[in-house]
Each structure stands twice: as C-alpha cells, then as structure tokens.
Image (cartoon, rainbow, N blue to C red; front, side, top):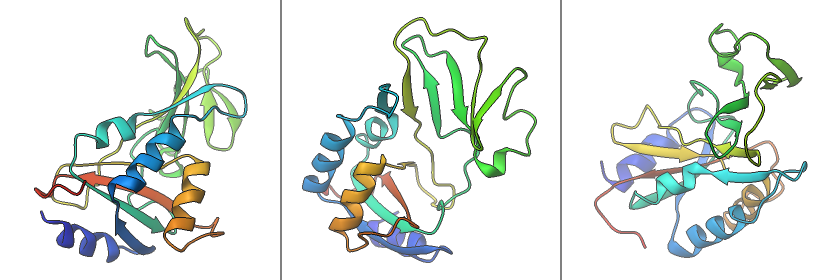
Length: 179
C-alpha cells in the first residue's frame, strides 16, 4: 500500500483532522524528546513503539479527536527489566472485559491499575506499547508520543494549543524511503 493511499484512508476516518508524512528531522526530534523523559514520579519512560517503527520506511503523524482505532488492550504498562507487568492502563473499551484486569488489582486512577502483590525486581519503568492499525491493509505499527513530544508535534504541524486532540504516529512500509 502506497503512502498516498494510506494518507487517504487515515484522513477519511471519523475524528481525524489531518495526517502528515514525517521527515528525518521530525523523526530525530521525536526520538530525542522521547529518550529524555522521566515520569512525574521519577520512573523511566520507554516507548517501544518508536523502536518498532524504526523497522518501517514511512512515518505519518495523525491528529484526531480520540484514538484512530479502539485499543484492544493496554497501551502503557508498568514493568521492570524482567518484563513482569505490575500495572497497566485500561482503555475505556477494555473496561467491560473481565480479562482486562485480573483479581487483586487496585485502581489508582479511572484508567490505570496496579497489582500490589507483584514486586519489581529492578527499577520500575513505564513502557508505551506499539499497536497495529487494523483498518490499513498493510503491516503497521503505531504509538502515541509523550505529552512533551505531543506538544512539539502539534506546534510543528499547526495544531498548537489543541489539548483536545490525540497525536498518533503510524509507521508502515510503502516501498519508498522517506529519510
């Protein structure tokens, strides 16, 4: 699937305001910004979506009202270097599923649970998980950037000050090198 076809499909989705192909400068800015983030509690922040997207040759920045696809499971997890998950977000659509939250969970906000019976074996971290974009008929990965990166992208593409918008990076192979 070519870049123009992907852009057309993304832009036709309900709630999508616009989508832009990202060049090497913007990708470098995203990587630099995301590599220096610590959470407000001082935890390490790791975005696996960026790592997975490096395998793809085309990257698109999407601005929308809400997610461009409904999350099918957690998008952010609390884990340690062993990979044991001891907390995660619970997207709205997943709250109805009994498998989304296991017994013993404590809700620390309206969309995040922790499991107090699991003790981290190393420094805990927040990890953003990559997701696919189901409505595109090609292999994709996507992720939502951190708040600081989100703000920089909105400024860059003319959506500055729009806290009501969701920013999603979608990566795929179009066959054409974009950077």
